[in-house]
Image 1 (cartoon, rainbow, N blue to C red):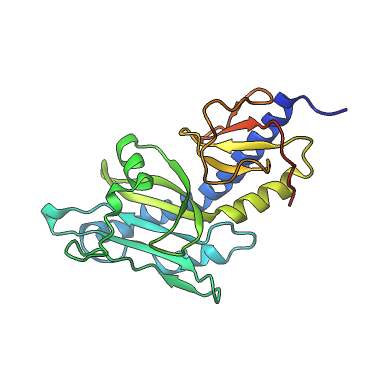
Image 2 (cartoon, rainbow, N blue to C red):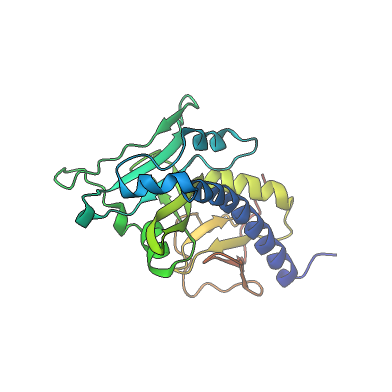
Length: 239
């Protein structure tokens, strides 16, 4: 018997939420490191906040993240500029390297991360956030999802802890968990942008047309700005 569309969409939503929580578990470990008693001095000076061994989280078995770390809120009035402590897995050789974007305001390549959604939303709301898919032009060049949560020190927003997950890895892992699907679905964000699709007619990164009819009940994904939309037509993809 083929599962009802609503039941299947709920199963997909639960699987997505489980993967997201898994990545946020890694983010939570980074955040805990940033909040340890000895790290506070790093926020008040230009000294490091995180220990170097935090980057070893990227080497954990079945780790989905390819980048993680801390992005610090600048304090111009205290002479504390933009800075981050972020490590990435080199797409070529698999080595771990420190991310060093151009943070000089006078430079042509200046990257003001304070305007980025993954930084601004946790700062404004005090809650964790998921952004993507987008092309990481300041780092790996991959199509990424970024998951962040605020770091608050002495009642003051001090930055965000976060992790980057390639869309391809996210999709492959999720489809392995779900197994063969009886019907296609589309995972979209609050703007209708497609995060993941198993329907051949809808591509990741595009916008699901406002008039597109769902083939069943739409299900919200707990803890994310996403929802699962049962798709009408197109071939089903599996990992």
